[in-house]
Amino acid sequence: MAKIAGFVFFVTILLAFSCGGQRSWATSVGVEVVGTEFHLSTGDGRTLRSAELIGAILTVATNGTTVRVRVDGVEPDPGDPARGYKPAADVWLYTFSVQQADGSWINLCEPGPDGRRQGFPLAGVARADGTIAPAEPGQFVLTCTGGAEGKCIRFGYRPWDKAPDGQSLAEAYQTCVHLVRADYAGDGTATTRNGQPIDIYDSLGVQAPANDPGQDFEAGWGPDGAVCVRHVRVKENVTLEAIAAHTPRLNRRVGPICTEEYARSLGAILFSRSPP
Image (cartoon, rainbow, N blue to C red; front, side, top):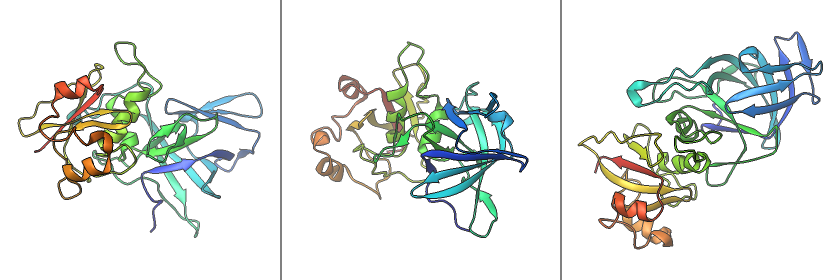
């Protein structure tokens, strides 16, 4: 059966809500996303949150049409220590199903690295480069944990939160999305592949390097993509020469010149290591 293309399901306006077929609130219902939690205001003055919405069906407007998405389950993120994911009190994982033309329901998400077919909402709207921009209340995306947008939240780069040193993590989140996708140009051109091992670390105190001897420094990253590239992650997909030709700001910043120290001098806030 067909899946919704991609890991990110873009939603603009919540049009209606129904729960278990027992009660419904139409466009008068207000909804916003706080962190990864739905806050739904009902017509009788109540505010329902994610854990109370199991069985809910959201009718949403997206790409000129409407789609029905059902909330089949909600749980706190348990983390995945084997991959460096730490539990976060403000991250919820949802099992979403989307209704097909024949009336059947299928899981919205493909399995992530830990096998979970879950996702969550994030406030904002999609940018052309694959990142998420702030938006009006009621505008959000549904992203799956297997995609870069979901992985970066679970890595700890939560855009609504602050780093241990007090800095906002909003730019770090956008940076992480480019990094995970190996989007060196920062224009939405992903060059990675599923299952590719990488080591992500930063200067913010969120992620420390694993220093796997089988990996070398790959690149330094900022909100606009890579600030320099020492070697490419997937050689079948792109070359240093192609990156330099495609992205003028990286023209003289590829190859051996790109060290972690050089990347820091260029303003990098995240760093990646990968097999050479």
